[in-house]
Every structure is written in C-alpha cells, then in structure tokens.
Image (tube, rainbow, N blue to C red; front, side, top):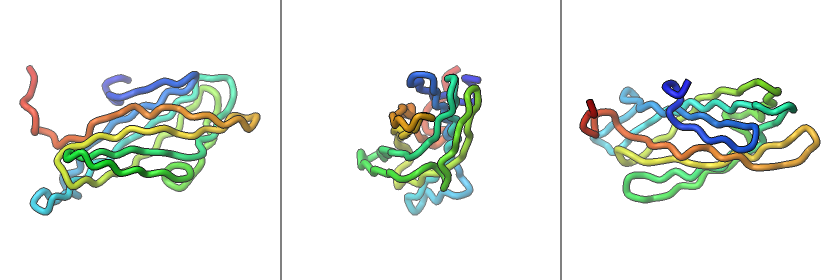
Length: 135
C-alpha cells in the first residue's frame, strides 16, 4: 500500500495517506500554470465512527509563497468514517511554479461530539522529470 500512497501520517487511530500526481493536460508551463491532483485516503483504525468536519491546508509554491486554505469538509461533504473504514477523495491544486508542497490538518468529530485535529502528511508537488532519475 505504501507504493500507492507515498505519504502518510497517523494521529491516534486515524491515518491519512496522500498520493499526488502532476496533470500535464491541465497545465500550461509557458504561462506559469501547473496543476496537480492529489488522492487522499483517511483510514479509521479505531473502534468508533468519526466525521471529517473541516480542512486546513498550507500550500507553499516554489518561490516560498504560502496560501492558506480552510473550509468545511472536503469536496463538499463531511464524511462519516466507520470503524475499520476509509474515505477516499481526489482534489486538485494549481501553482504558478514547477514545484511546491502541501501540508495541513483535518478537524474531526468523534461520536460523542468531541472535536480533535489530525495531521495531513506534508507532500511534495513536482513536475516529473525535473529531477535526475535515481537507478
């Protein structure tokens, strides 16, 4: 599973995994526009359901500019993740540079109404082929 999701972070019984992919079809390098998709999986290894209430991202481009993005839920929903279950979604991020990074936190709510935060692993956005291949 590590191959599919190269980045992961675990907070308590919850693991967040991320796999970013560069989207050349949606990017326009000549105009300084680069787009990535990132697939996120939130796994609940605990014994009670949890709800993903909100997200808080820090997006840093290759020039060090930081954009903060926060809001309710993810992709328009606040999913309930049952014990032993997982929630997957795909979103996107445009940047003005060929590389950057994202990191953040999800605000979660336990069945009893307790709210807590979990880490989203920091991950790199880069255009494939920008680095020499390692053999």
